[in-house]
Image 1 (cartoon, rainbow, N blue to C red):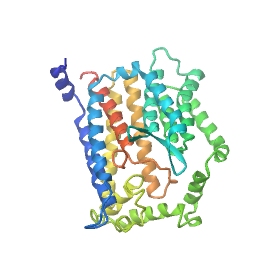
Image 2 (cartoon, one colour):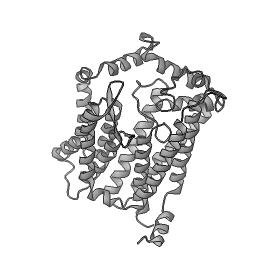
Image 3 (spheres, helix red, strand yellow):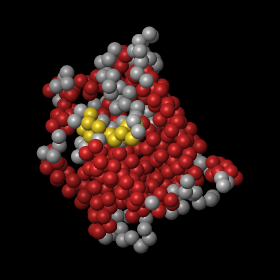
Image 4 (cartoon, rainbow, N blue to C red):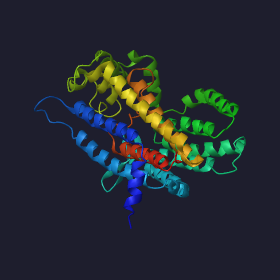
Length: 371
């Protein structure tokens, strides 16, 4: 039987400011996805914005489900969730839909699902469960090695799809979660130096298109009509917005198709925002994301146990990396990686996974210590 009194009590304890910020970003996402697919009066539009509304509603339902569910239940099933994610990552390599040479999608009853999105959450939950175990020796090399192994398996599988951008998100997540539980800083610095030393070796493991993205980032003129086109058009869109922008539905780079219509609603949605709302609107969006990050870490500080604290830190770091890399990519400060912008970029799997993550944060906050 549903205990309505208990539900009302938990709803009152939610971080409603964080919820409203998340909702505002979702609404902005739908508005600018609409703008990114608009081509003028009377011209047929892509139904992306309608699909995004559906995914947003599904994500909102999952958000409340996760918020009202005790997050300790995730801990009890952490390894089942992790194992399920690994199985899906293996299946996508053999049965996944191929798009531009990559296998990243599985079809379930006609719905395309991206297992790597589930895997990111599964890694956070598994790491939080492992690192929060009482009596765990954080100075032991075995503890660090086991945490890296938990992250390493999905990292390799996602890299095989190939999806370097999504795989790379896992690295700062595990490092900062290790730092949060007290792993010695010298150990983390050693791992960082070791990673830098292996970068030249990693170059030879990259696919040709990934190498091309890096080379084009360094010099877009090497392929101005190919791989360098998106980068240059994105920078033009951002720069042409000026202080206040050109107005909603009036972004010429987007409407005229200079910013490719295949990427404007997803990877380059921030370019559309910057062109149409200018510096002021772009900074307003950044401020909303800062508020989301603050909400995640506020929940971490209020958490009643190490498991809840690590869940919030993991989610907060994951969101931060996505936002930082996506925006840096659109303004030309990083190579194009294909990482979407949380809550705003078009995409069903990504929207649902982010809303589930935000629901987990709320679950921790709702069950915080009183005071």
